[in-house]
Image 1 (cartoon, rainbow, N blue to C red):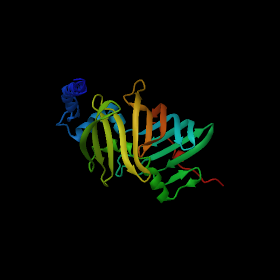
Image 2: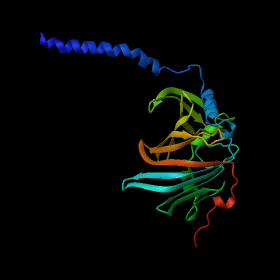
Image 3: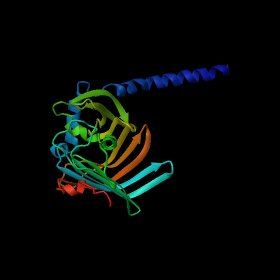
Length: 259
């Protein structure tokens, strides 16, 4: 008689699980099934700050970074980025506008990378174009969502999912040259929580969290960004402040080779 007890318990457990299954199935079905990809992107634009966010003049951000390597963890206490945005873009993963990225570790400049609209520079001076294209293909990608509703772009809605406990829409933005970028957009507040795309270095993902605003601005800024290649976390950025709409001299984006 005792031999049958486990069987009965297993059957009862199966019934209990089956009773919760419809809820799980419902959660896996498309949310707002009639919503198209472009509609989801439009909601993300509005949630992030509207026209100010979609077509910013410039952006400056400052914070810290943590890098994970085979040798251990390295903290860089000063990480900065200056960005001047173009009016239009064509290729999602190619440099555009102007940009300067630099960080210092223990008070010493450890990396400098700039693009002045035509050429790329490091601390050593101008970088060969082939090397520069590879470098920027691993850095550019998120900004394409700003142009996703422009002429020549396509937006596809993919199956919904859950990202770190939050239900998300998944859309694929295809630029005029065929470049593809995936975005995970929260179903509740339409924040952009993830971007993912292929790079020469591997499959690249960035996870965005801990959003904040500045008084008087609708711009929504993630303060934490985690960067992954082929599923492995490489580094994290912690943005602490940002400035919008400033003018920057052309010289900021050019670097003279050391003599």
